[in-house]
Length: 130
Image (cartoon, rainbow, N blue to C red; front, side, top):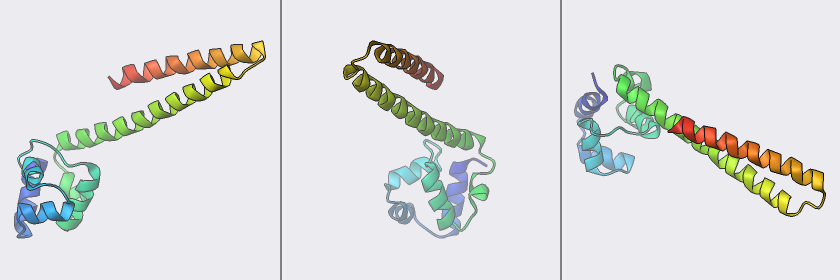
């Protein structure tokens, strides 16, 4: 069973309207409708809240819909990649500031090498994401 059908079935078993579920999750009724018609998927936080609301385990709610599970995995990977990208950009900023204030020639060479290495790493990270 796909997640949309499962969400609708559970909501109806609990005798809840889409409006009631939407109010509980602080989303619009249209969002609940989109989830139930498999036009979009809830994020992992909302999946947990839906499982609690419908008195199911997360496994019971998600089992059987491989497309939904892949979507959650991809979303999680994207967040991890974003954090790595932010860390790399911060490191670049630190290296550039260090380079500006460096007075010794050999330290400047070390910082330039680290900066180029970090830029290459960020480039590979971006290609991996795309």
